[in-house]
Length: 334
Image (tube, rainbow, N blue to C red; front, side, top):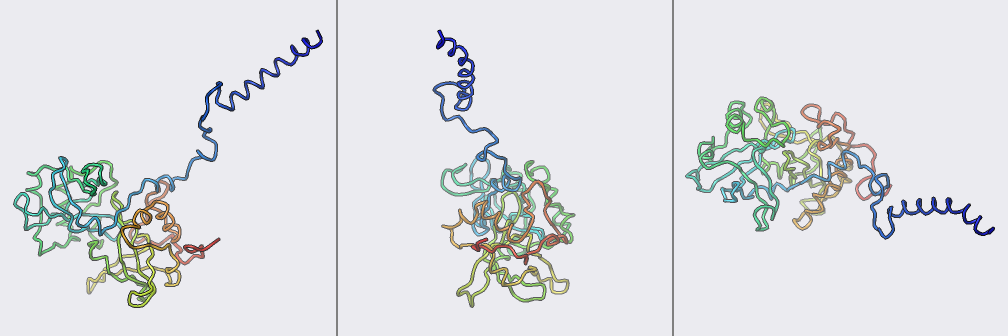
């Protein structure tokens, strides 16, 4: 009788313990692998910058130039001849050739970047090639404003830009950010991506820091970073580093019209920047969001993809930067 009374007294306590244990192991007997709660380290919220960076896509300009262009029905229209970027790093136009299609083989066409759609390999074509989609019918393309291959227009002209912007005004993707309007470009410099490669980068005092070897493009419509070759002698022993476009100031001299690229940084500091490895076999690593984020962190540059900040532009570029700030260099241990 004493044992029965003791069991009766302990029964409620045992029941509560069993219920508590069941709740911690999945709620019901036999269920395993229940995901941890949202407050555990595995599921803690990530910062705005990191989350946005995970969605970045970066393509080398040398790969985009020459990339084929198709219509929405996957019919080849032509290819990309060049990319036109502004001093603020926005991609203004893609210059297309149609290779004799529609009787316009002697012309190039400047298409606002926001009209085109990037499709990665196998997403649409199934042939292992990346492609740009131009979702316009052939009749509309026949009547589009173009220019002679041997005579490029002055793309900083507000009149020329206005004609292009007006013609494609209703064709822009609604998912893109604010389009680069003609009026905003009147005082801006524009340059082809093919011209950027090989250009010198200088200090404010005119000392050479290095030269550009590659341009990384974000399909959302921006230059993500440029690759600068620094150090070495006659190309021997040089180091390639990635530099955010926001850390570079592009200016055009009033008299000579020559475009200059300037960075407010010392050569010693630049040589310690995140290293870029040339070669297509390394592109997946060099375009990885983690690498891109590290590049922007090194130069103390606000990332343009972060929804919590605004992208530095125009005369404000470099305003909040301290690129010579004593941060751990690439590969340095803290």
